[in-house]
Image 1: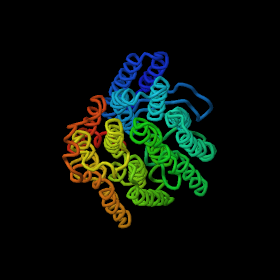
Image 2: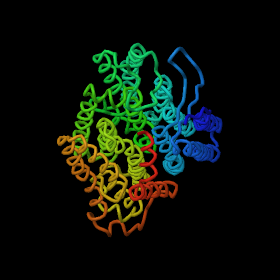
Image 3: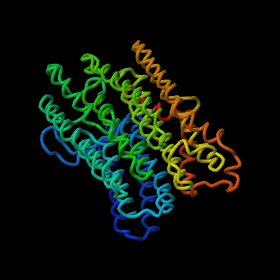
Image 4: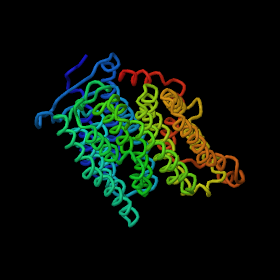
Length: 489
């Protein structure tokens, strides 16, 4: 069932209007923050309104403009669209409340610019979610890049500008140097930039030159540098100079999720599982992702700065999505795509915790956090729960991802990838468990009892605790997202 409707434009339109309302709110913080929260809630409700159609096996399509034959500014909503659309809109609600506590708690400057750019980044995320072809996807992908630059450079100091410069060089360089040639080659080889309806066949004809199809494919894989596949990952740790809510936006909500979503969309809806399997490039992609998983995890072990450790954790965890889809097996694809959801809730919790620790105690180094669990029991409890999800321990959400990924590796009889998944779990534990141990079991309790509990503001603590609890719920009841992803097959 195909429904022709402008419904996909509604959440995009709400985010655009929200960003404009925030921009004109000027220095009225209460009004500015109201629009941010209200826009996030309305966007999420607009996304939820499209779920029944897709749940019943349907697809929503809409063409806004025909640019040329086979090139359109068009939109589509299917199961994959909703996965990213739900995550980015729902987590925006959490981030909106958290922003209030963080920005006010540190009395940050340029808050109107900050909130406006934050909202426009969600415009890009929603646009990427519902793009019906490569042309639309590319436009919204660039919107995210352009409007997160001021967020990365927010502090406007030497470190901030250096991190933002690297961010732009990596992301704009790859989009112009790799993505644009990939789009041109795709159009030359197929005559269209629209996505296929069947994830098996893709849009490339059987007669297409295998060499050029392969070249085009890898231009896409590395062109979407937001996915942080090695060696195009270094912008991500450098972008940690941004305020912590921006780091959460980068890692859990919009930016890196847009990268792995775009790669997943191109693999499934442009090339198709059949072509990737016949050319053998799906398995090559899986090994590239596996290398990134292990290498980034090893680097994370060496980092004492909490945000830096979380950054390299993100580089590693993102590649689970790519690896899962690249397995080309139903279990693997399901495990990869559901990790967009599971990683989103768990990682935003971890970054929210890092920000709460900084606001309440101005600590960034893990080595300085001995006993901090006594002063921040709710924050560090949420951190511990989200860490278990990242490790893949039951019953938290990350276990569901790992379970399907392991089944996917078994289904294609790949012992090396199975070993990588198991080794990465050990490495995950190696860089997360010591943080929890240090917080609750090291240092003298009396050191913190003198000042009793010193949590961050409630507008920060409540969102991070709720996000952690949702990670637990998604681990126990993954049925909705598992069922939704199943509509792809």
